[in-house]
Image (cartoon, rainbow, N blue to C red):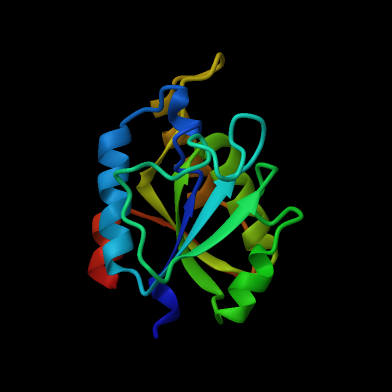
Amino acid sequence: MSASRFLMVIDMQNGVFASPRINRETCTSRINQLIQAADKVIFIQHAEEGLEPGSEGFELLPELIQPADALYVTKTACDAFYRTDLEKVLRDNSIDEFVVCGCATDYCVDSTIKNGASRGYAMTVAEDAHTTANRPAALAETLIAHYNDVWRNFTIPGNTLLVKSTADILAAW
């Protein structure tokens, strides 16, 4: 199994999308394309008030494909590595390189990418398969473009952090 065909999907949950997110349909369509091409998918789900495990809010969006062998990690902070078993799940599945997509570009996706890169994981961000909400300081489209640029220029000597379109990722797979 190629290490480059692992996919991490962050916070694509009903309760997270209770607040409007930009391009939901396009984003989930691209994520589903990645899910169908991946050898293994890890769904990261946020738990907090209104997103309790077992609740409707905690559940993944109904339009997302969930492979039978998918892995699931529950988090309580923006960073999916913080006080979770994510690192153990990655290690147990011999995953040291993966594609990242999902929701809350400026919070959960960004925090997880930066911590993962610091831990030595080689990641590729699907630049057109992550979303967020409009914020008081910037519109969602601006935030997505900004973070793609931040990650594209992120300095992490000895590691790989790439930003590519879904189409380019699928072509490489």
